Length: 271
Ligand SMILES: [Zn+2]
Image 1 (cartoon, rainbow, N blue to C red):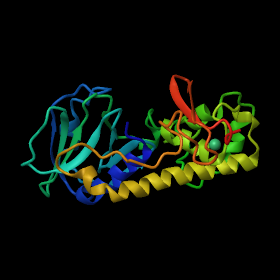
Image 2 (image 1 turned 90 degrees about the vertical axis):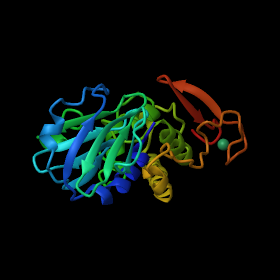
Image 3 (image 1 turned 30 degrees about the vertical axis):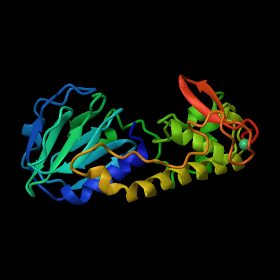
Image 4 (image 1 turned 45 degrees about the horizontal axis):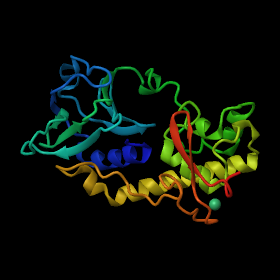
């Protein structure tokens, strides 16, 4: 599933090709994504220039003159830059065709993604209005996390994966960050000290930033004309490593289920 680092890498990959370009046409081959693509989309955005290519959480925001196209990649979506010569494949649902002859193409086999249009401030759109701070921005800091965790009996893992608290910490990143911070994923959020919140915040920032940096090195793969998106083969300490020795203490990594998601952690190093 595309997580925040993949979405940010996608943003960086497509921006130089489409920013300040005019949308000459839009082709929607299948409207039935997670929410239907607006029937009037083509009519509304044709002949408009892209003025910004932003990201909020896992949403990509194409700023146009009269509004914003909101794109979400869902479970299996990817965007690539291609040309009119690029063969359209089965799951290529949407093309944005630009004046520079480049095409921004959305492929989404499982169709949990979304392409929406809003004339409001995107931050006020119902999908974005209740999102927590960006993890890599200053608003996400130890004092903020400490405040948000007070009197919360939920596990710290579920709390950091809650997009109302902070966006973009998916399951893999939550497991890895908690390992780096030495925090047991089952620990009640409200029991964390400010110092441990500080450790966790910096671990989250480190894990996400590293992943984005690695994404940068595979950028060409990400937006190449054909082929599948290259999700990052990051070095993982705990995720997917049940039974393997912990990199710090050598004891086997344990796997449990929390809120229907797999959690991987070291019972010795994470308290
Ligand atoms: Zn360990």
